[in-house]
Image (cartoon, rainbow, N blue to C red; front, top):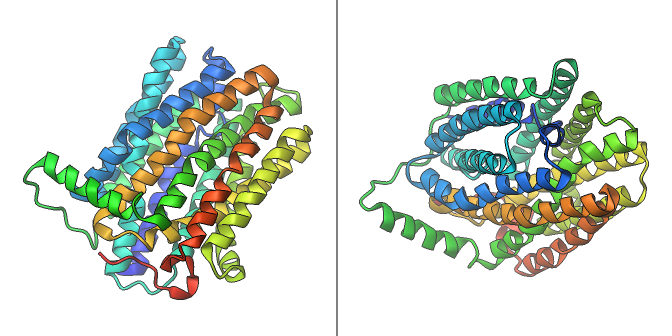
Length: 417
């Protein structure tokens, strides 16, 4: 399969899966509150989602590194289909919090089959097909495709909820996840990766985990960015989902679901802009860690302003800036890490990175959610800004390592298999 065909398949998968997932992103917090959960319980349910990711990230990464990336992706689509329908059932029955916690953990399992596997599938395929472009650009295209799909999904989900009820977008999401499974079944094939002959599952997993530690946490340039992930990811997940009720509170209408969808659509639009700006950012900064430092610092400042300046239009605009910073940094971070991870351990190391990010969400989301319960959303964003600043020392430590993938002039940065 040629590299341009691989990239088109990757972008197609990004569009269909993000369209499906994002149908509920603009209204998810409102959905949980409508089901009878408090603000703290809603974010605690989200924390169980990230706890599910923590529990299953490495095992599902091992599945991708042994059985195959395609198999992992198909399992993810199927799991998300079932757990989305379960969420809808819990809403209809006004289920207790314990049921929401279990369903949220199951959703987390579904996403762990995606994380690591999709990215590893693309990098493996590009390596095998002789791709001579920049990983920043490839991931930037994915970011733009994701943003376009997210804009359609979140705005559509908000308008649909406004016209019907909060449950209908979840039903549509399930249908689109079924379509995602079919698209992956027909077009996604492992290229540049061969499933390993399995003799002992236990020894196989132990071997992959040892190698993953060697190329992950025991590899200093990778380690420092991985250790920054809990702070950045925990704050970003809270910042996105809290923006919906926060802006509705500032707007003065708690049931304007279309505004909530528009809010998430704004994040998607900013994501498109951030993905499009990757090449410009790359040219502006010779070293990837320089770009990561700037975007992380600006993100902290913007979060603080969102909490201090409690005006609907100002917070709306700041949310766009925050989203652009996040979107511009993500492909650069992906390129940095992938340039240091061999193919055989790529999915597992990337899943370990995602695991650390999810760990931050398990702790930070309920803490910030509880602070919003006690002091309101504004102060919780200021606290989030302080947590975001903890990312900076780890990026500085990664910068000191002078890794080969830090310097864009060292392209190609694909780590050998």
